[in-house]
Image (cartoon, rainbow, N blue to C red; front, side):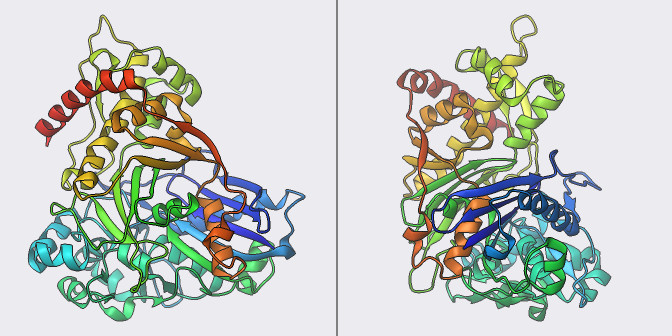
Amino acid sequence: MQLLGIDIGSSSVKAAIIDGATGRCLAAGQYPDVEMTIEAPQAGWAEQHPDMWYNNFKQALARLMKNPEVKADQIGAIGISYQMHGLVLVDKAMNPLRNAIIWCDSRATGIGAQAFKGLGEEWCLSHLLNSPGNFTASKLKWVIDNQKAIYEKAAHFMLPGDYIAMKLTGEVNTTVSGLSEGIFWDFKNDKLSSELLAQYGIDAAKTPQIVPTFGDQGKLSAAAAAELGLKAGIPVTYRAGDQPNNAFSLNVLNPGEVAATAGTSGVVYAISDQVSYDPHSRVNAFAHVNHTAAAKRLGVLLCINGTGIQYSWMKREVGKNQYSYPELNEKAAMVPPGSEGVRVFPFGNGAERVLKNQNPGARISGINFNQHHDGHLFRAAQEGIAFSFKYGMEVMNGMGISTSLIRAGSANLFLSPLFRKTLASITGATIELYNTDGAIGAARGAGVGANYYKNFSEAFVGFEKTMEAEPVPQMTSQLGEVYESWKSELENMI
């Protein structure tokens, strides 16, 4: 059996097809080749049309189908990974009623803050494990308050992955993991939160039907099959937000295991079996892919919005696209640790949860016109991202979560030797890299959900470590003081 995985990001849509028996990736690709457009009608807003995701998936899949090892009639299951916290509204005919409000949109921050007080901070943290903050439920409340006619016409609210599954199967459903990332799920009572729905005036009937994360979520419709060049009836058997799925793709399923990513946003995601929370709600806890009421598995998530997007900004605006990413990394590596006093704060992509939902904007400081050049900015950018990870991991450590071993995919900023060494040295964590990504993880998840694999261990056949980065003692010593200076400047900003 061949297994198809889809990864709906905000920058691109990726797809992968693996051989189920060996775990070998037969074909992988993405579309488009440049980053997808994010529309910003107002400052702090971020929107994408959901049909753009589906159309780009079709293009990505078409590229994969040209590979002679891919056999359309052997694809036996489909898994979906998707950008978290987005809001899609569809009418009864399953058509989108407006652009999706995506993860980095900060328009609902104030709404979430009001609900946090209205519902009670302790109640929210103990029942929802998070403040309503800027998550999907609060974005839906913004629509209720500002676009009432659209809300009333909506038959269902859904997350981006729910929309893609609907396009494939014609069925409208969601998962507990998805509802938890939208801050709809009451962990204490293990049900949809009637209190939150009442606070926001959300009609529970607009909630999609709940299906398991692993299991039958609908079958590929004849119409979708014709569009995609696949056979009708292939089951969709797995769905998860990008960060739970990234952790799954790295075989991070048990307490004490940690996954990280540094794409458009940066994430550290640690598994816990304790229903615990940060009293300041600076990190978030969601139902992990293998969470059940009987065996709790929560993913405690630290998110930094402005990581890869900040580095791509540096490439485009400072480097004027004259350098590839490896060339940027080489220029950065020529500068000593600490960037000779240049500091970069990568907080220019919306409100930051780890900063208590504040949006201080990005900042560059310490530049000396007679001393510094673009290489200093490139290194300081990578250090600033590593420092922001360290800042958030200190919060997780305070919750009793160990972050001494981090697994990551061989992608994005983790491709930079400088970033790996900097992150390992400033956090004291060993970093293990694996040749996997969200689309491959979704394909493995599809195999689990289709019962092709009897257990999670079987699903990770062929899963091998490609690289390891240990803390460098000299860098640890050099960067410790630099980090404290960076942290002090940050706290003065907020």
